[in-house]
Image 1: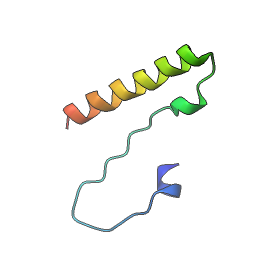
Image 2: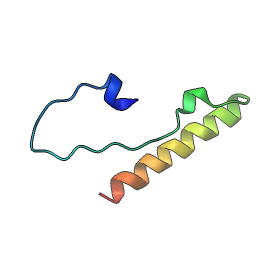
Image 3: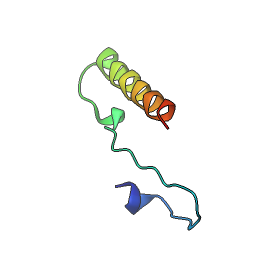
Length: 51
């Protein structure tokens, strides 16, 4: 959905898009949802480190 909701500014820069789950949509109790946010945070960290 990022292409639908995020503006595009034409440049000669590289455009990155990663399909990540929406942690706000995670089911479960507060602790389980918090864990999903942490998992997504860690995924983002790993993706950035691998650039």
